[in-house]
Image 1 (tube, protein in one colour):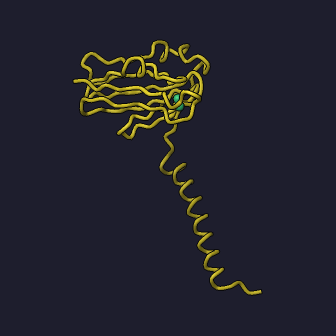
Image 2 (cartoon, rainbow, N blue to C red):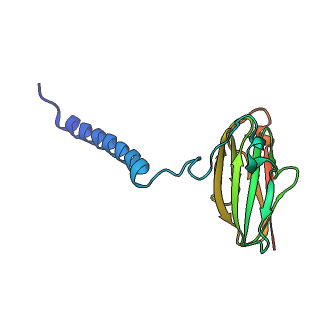
Image 3 (cartoon, helix red, strand yellow):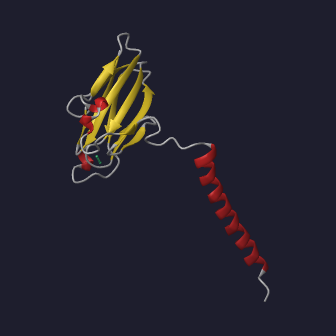
Length: 162
Ligand code: CUA
C-alpha cells in the first residue's frame, strides 16, 4: 500500500515537532543548566519547622553596616509572608538583596509585581535569589501558587528606601 504524498509530509512535520521538543528539553537540562530551588539554597533540617534551621530562626531583614548588601529571610505561610505582610520588607535602594525563602506548610509563590522575581516557596527547601532594587518605591508581593482558602488574600509589600 502506498502512503499519500501529503500524509508523508505531515508525518514528517509531526516527527520534526517531536524531535524539536526532545531537543529543547535536553538543551534546558544539559546545556543551559536548570537553576532550580536547591541549587543555591538547599534542604532544611526539619521541613515541618524551618525555624529549627539557623537561617530561619528569626525571619527578617539583615543588612551589613554600609547597607551595600542585605539578606532577607522570608517564611511564606498560610496566608501571609513573614516578614512582608504584617510589616513590609524594607531594603535600601541599590543594595544587593539576597532573599532566602521557604514555607513551613504548603507550596506558595513569591512574585514581586512589576519585576521578574517569581519564585516558589517549597516546604523543606530554601530558595535563594538575589535582587537589586535601583529606585526607591513600593512593590507588591503576591502568592501565585494556590495554597488554600486564603490564597487570594496572601500578599505582602517591599519598601525600597533611600
Ligand atoms: Cu500562598 Cu497562595
